[in-house]
Length: 500
Picture 1: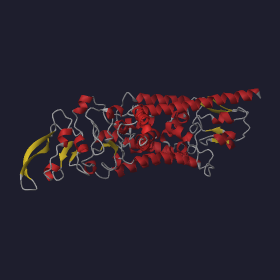
Picture 2 (picture 1 turned 180 degrees about the vertical axis):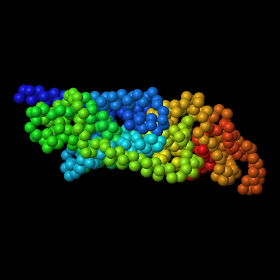
Picture 3 (picture 1 turned 30 degrees about the horizontal axis):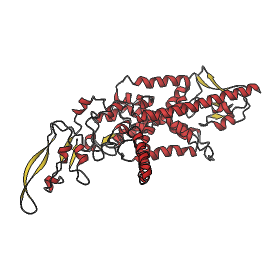
Picture 4 (picture 1 turned 60 degrees about the vertical axis):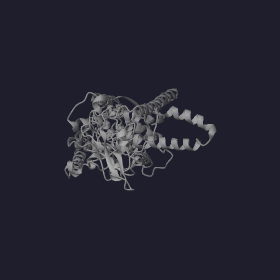
């Protein structure tokens, strides 16, 4: 009995350690996210491998993700159970008290994640990274960058506005605001396209826990599928001793449902996330983790010819559908890419993670909709009416994890045109209504102004002759930063717009 208590106590220590690691790794995720560093995505071997295949080029930072794969050969899917921020959120919102009517779903559903993994890698061969929207780390970064963090910012701003009417609280509110801005939130309230949608996607993934614990990890996650394949030959795995009495307790607590009492309470290492709950629940100490030097048996849902053909077929069909029309016929003239980025780099390197969106201080970078067809969906695009490309900023290139936006030095960035400002004389106040306005010229940040003023003599509404200044764009100087468009006082579409 003393041995049993010692074993249970030992398991509880490991469970507490796992909980601590999950909390610390999630805090680390938030810190890296707030600092807008590219490390998060570079830890993702699926993202890095797909980008490598699509771009046909190798970058030194790919070795970071290779190290994660090496760890998987030792610890299996421990990433999923210990470090993955989405997995941690799914554990926190496990709805354990909810009666899951559909907990025991058909085992073949587990093959979906393998089909998706094969489709992602096969599509990358066609230089298409669209399916990386299913990668768990891109989901987390996108949701926080475009939905959750701006939403939290708006909520705090709303509460502050309401409390600011109380004179006694104004000083404390000002100090609080100085504390969180710009350390945690932007000094101006950002607005992003479809922010609610990205938050809703994360909420939908969490709500799948109502059907089965860790539904996403069991059936959909392509990164989990990649780790699952390596886990078949990992060194450290779950073991079941001869003292097992088949009590089913370990089967009941397993979050991925991979323990089957009818098969001797063994588990599939490709599905086991190393959560250690089985070890803690076992009353006889039969369940533990240690070295196993043998290939794990394959199951009907593991990747085989059927999954391979389905994945390849899905990738081929998607590639054909996305390229029905020539790209130059689809791209809008107002699709402005971040500095140094090209349509080729967007297709072959952009993983749609949202890191650049988070790093942009003016919220100019937005997720694309249909500006370049379905193939470029959710890639970054500059929307100058919501923000502008700050002349003294090159953050987007520094934070891009794959080089889709090149890390230009500031001087090089300032000399790299991303578009050209064009004046609509039918909307411009001095041209269309003979109303004085020189906002665009005043705002132009280029040292040698890209917008100049030409004096004109016009007839006013009383029939008299008056002089005013009309703006003109100097093509050789304009870099398309969009500050003129952002500041244009004309309602609706600006009278000066940046075009490709």
